Image 1 (cartoon, rainbow, N blue to C red):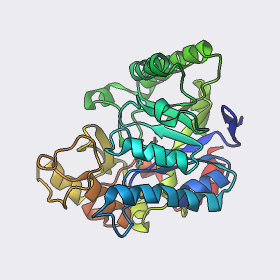
Image 2 (image 1 turned 180 degrees about the vertical axis):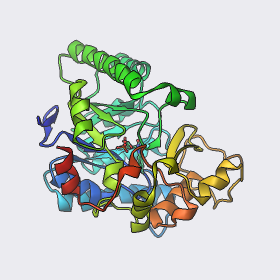
Image 3 (image 1 turned 120 degrees about the vertical axis):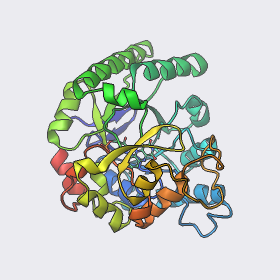
Image 4 (image 1 turned 90 degrees about the vertical axis):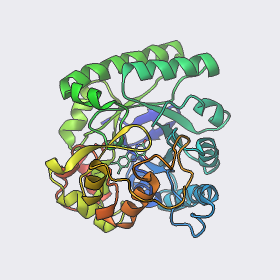
Length: 349
Ligand SMILES: Cc1cc2nc3c(=O)[nH]c(=O)nc-3n(C[C@H](O)[C@H](O)[C@H](O)COP(=O)(O)O)c2cc1C
């Protein structure tokens, strides 16, 4: 096992814990992963939902919570690597990036859209930056754009495949097209593209593979494809240290393979989630009533959406699992018992 080196920052274990939005990966999970030698990632998506003024002032509440969750993580791991996942689709994307840099983020990972502005927003800071890409095409587009506009390249690239949880960077028909074997070819092409940019800039750009990394065999396969590390999310949900409500974790433990489905999201990308009474109603075409807009997404028309993504993810984080959107990876059904972060990392490596 080689450490994961991102420029001058080194993680002893070549593992990034994937960001999980709205209260699933906060300071406790990220801090514990960092303490155990991996890179802990706090998700900024509606991170302030527990702040008392969240309904009235969501932007301020989120920015405050970005700071607070880093403080929590740092208290657990003063010297480990801790970063943020910041979705490009967020209305306050730029403000979240600025707050993350100010909070001392080691790394910012951005997906759910291509993070065209990220290098400009982090310029002059020691924060490393990584786009999430799912296809060779998206890797080429973002790395060319950064090269042309900012004369720089990525510090790390996350390749997120079709088995990931949360929002997926594929259209529904693409998800059907990509068998594991076909997607491996895509991964190799993405790695080749990334190596081209690394050569051009005479630097190293480590690549990590995400989506369906569940056991040591998956880690070895990812490394054999040429990756320097893996990003793992679902497996950490059923840890004691994960920030989600215990009922959310139990929903993973109780899910079977057939319960995991592809769902439509107001973000405009397909997502993967556990089929529950809420999702059944959505799939039958019911329009779910929602609270006043939380102004989370740059592009969302509250009058048209089938359900509010923030409402449904907050209910998930709070444990109202029947009436919530329960994002999960394709292999989440494999969880059989609660573990600790250390046990998960030991079993993967
Ligand atoms: C509950 C959940 C929430 C997620 N939220 C986000 C998010 O807010 N932003 C993001 O870029 N990725 C998100 N993801 C994707 C993960 O960061 C990760 O890349 C992916 O799930 C890896 O696949 P795995 O779950 O099979 O390990 C989420 C995944 C899950 C399971």
